[in-house]
Length: 103
Image (cartoon, rainbow, N blue to C red):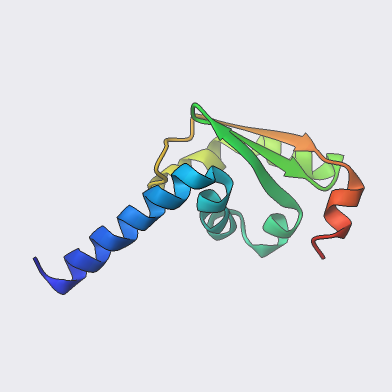
């Protein structure tokens, strides 16, 4: 096995391990790649269950805007091969206090 294949196997194994411990952590870096820094700074992955990813948003405006792009975002995330296929993304508004601590 070439060194690149060995490294790929190690990274894949670590991704699966991380995913099992906390799906949100495993998805957070993929999320930022797909949606960009501005959206990522105003959103947080809450849960991932049976293909349904729930994302908390800092305002109702972000919820409305992102709902319009949910299917396209899911397609882009799935192209990056997350350990679990994303079939739906739900966006919810979270309390403002949880966002103040992130900045």
